[in-house]
Length: 289
Image (cartoon, rainbow, N blue to C red; front, side):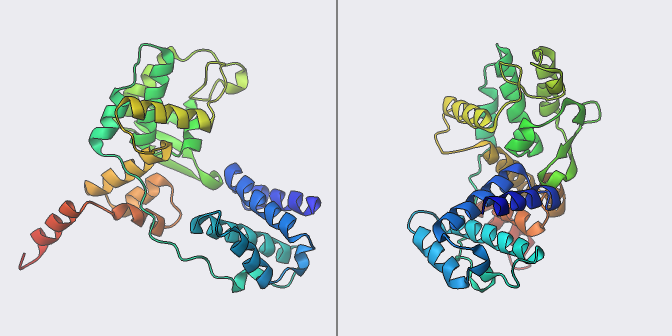
């Protein structure tokens, strides 16, 4: 089983080009199933998958159950590719019905309060403000912010080159606030701990790249200081970036490109504009409005 998991991990990383976080998540889900199943996965049938998901249904959400099923489906598809199976037992298992997921979104004023509330009298404060401006101004994922390279930020041309999920590249325009904050950070950025970190944009006090956890904690701290008590994360700024663009008339396809979404269906979730705006738009265009 250990050998199977090792080979499957290699397949996800090298052939599917999945992100490290997705690889880790999929392998963790598959390992948990194999441990619970306790037998040769080449012999697993659909009923085994259903029983396993049922045993977890009280402890994890439907969304997590769906993720586990996707991970197992991927694993069994890989076994088919390897000639170890002729069928996928997950094909006959329905994904749990999920309600429409609406992400937490900040108002423009809340975003402003959080960013402008960051104290910039230390280099850490200047860095944190630059990170927040990039998260909101460019719609970055937290992993993209942590791995952002200085050489991929073109402040003179006002755009940033992002290497996103699956090593897919996209170009995102930078607004004036993001440019100013990033340049201010470069002016005070301390030396890196090693030459290999010299091109990493955001580093910690040890001169090493910031971790995702550090950015999560920074966001929560500055949100609380600004009086925003809702549960938010770095991804909330990405959600807010997309929502505010669409509310202000940006084309859905353009937002899709800027977010790096493979399918426009993923981007459509950001069309949940407030009822007042929606009502005004409909009535102003209706012939009998």
